[in-house]
Image (cartoon, rainbow, N blue to C red; front, side, top):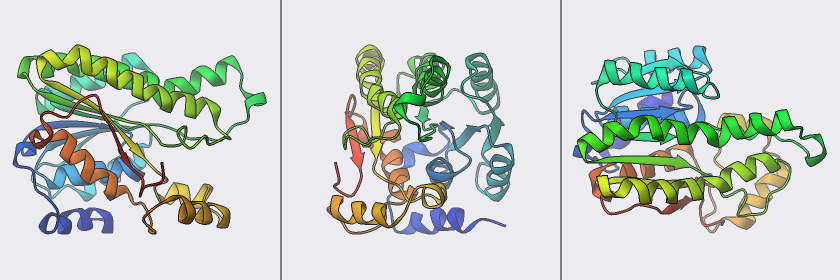
Length: 266
């Protein structure tokens, strides 16, 4: 049985845009088992893409793949620890063998675990960089040859408005997310001659189950109401629909950009 979220993604195809260029295109999504990543998976599958997704949460990943099993192309889930670069590269090779050359990459995986400046150690610093930014570079490196051969491709790096708002409470996370902009622009310049587009997608405070369970309180609700121009909840599907556009040929001349989806907060 499909989850309410996956059923909703399908129903919305009759309301929101369809992208013929995404049909049968191989799309890789990191951190795709839950939250925003799961919405990416659902929406790309609903477009008829061949979707693979990685996550460390095997239970949630298997469940999502099963829920979408009656789609045109059942998504391929692989359990991958993205901080293990050798494992990441092997998994990407496995996706290529199973689904064909990868022509769209959504670098979504991250962890916004709260931490204090005084508690950061060299080891925890390196771990925060590894889970929030390092894998984005190596995933892009690993799929670039596929995209060069195809003379087309789209890489979407997930950033955050957190550092733009000068948020405190997780300095290594905001450092990593600010770095996404530099990574995006550097890759866009080097890969542009091959018709490969690289953009950053910057969410505001997205109301995933994790965010509501761990961080959202009355003060947070007030901050959202005061900060956003649009008074409403920012949802995972709001990010997913922008990712569809950035991956599709409709955005063929958009690269090296920061696309902010935050209800007008930043």
